[in-house]
Amino acid sequence: MKPLQFLCLPLLALHLHAADTNALTLVKTIPLPNVTGRLDHFAIDLKGQRLFMSGLSNNTVEIFDLAAGKRIHTITGCSKPQGLAFLPAQNHLVIANGISGEVQIVDGSTLQAIKVFAGLPNSDNVRYDAKSDLIYVGYGSGALGVINATNGKWLRNLELAGHPESFQLEKNGNRIFVNVPDAGHIAVVDRLLNTVVATWPMDQFHANYPMALDEANHRLLVGCRQPARLVVIDTTTGKRVTDIEISGDTDDLFYDASRKQIFVSCGAGFIDVIDQVGADSYHLRERIPTVSGARTSYLSPDRGEFYLGVRDFPTPGQAELRVYQLN
Image (tube, rainbow, N blue to C red; front, side):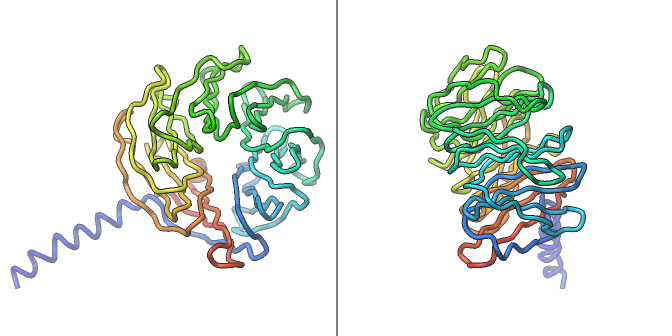
């Protein structure tokens, strides 16, 4: 009996340790039976406990009541909606429509458009800078559009060398970091000077789509598809610090500063969770199986939740929102 006990106890300890290290726990699945095709980005209304999700191929924006754990409304009549941003002070939702080239500002109570900006083809990612009260929209063959959120007026364009994918704004600085995969670089924009002040080449790593910013450690976290790597860049020098393998076909990634973790949603069918051991050291904590094509997500550290959009492929009629608790 003693040899058996000797073997079993370490195995039990290993199992318990593995259970303890799970970063996410699936706590809710919300079916979306009438949502078909690709899904895209999210936005959140923390005060109202609402989550917004772009049904890109469905030409809708889906709205969820997070307290009740259910879908409560669908905004129809969109045109390939991609990026979303919620403006809490105004209670406005910004919707970037890729096909029509319209950016809509929607009243958060009536869910009716109160302002529409046209002529912005392939409108994509949207960011809101609360400090300056400005909305930034990536669009076209290479530009960031700037909108005054207070009066809803168009201000200017910031020209880029290619279509912008994910971009991140410094909170304690004036820079915007922009993934420009067609140009093979990251553009650094000074939003006071309204111009590109640097470009950081992505020579070895291509298809740089998602991005997150660890501003405290001066680290930019960039998800690449070719090859599938998370690339860490020093924002003081623009140089690569390190890189780590991730699952294929990533489209969203988020950094949780309090937990020192990075969450990467990948269309290959996984959520990769990466531990930040130090500013220059990262390792894969776990790879959580999901569904092929489920590559868009959203992290809410305030709610302690992670949301994953699951499209209706390979199972027709089975689109859903998955809600994970952060452990």
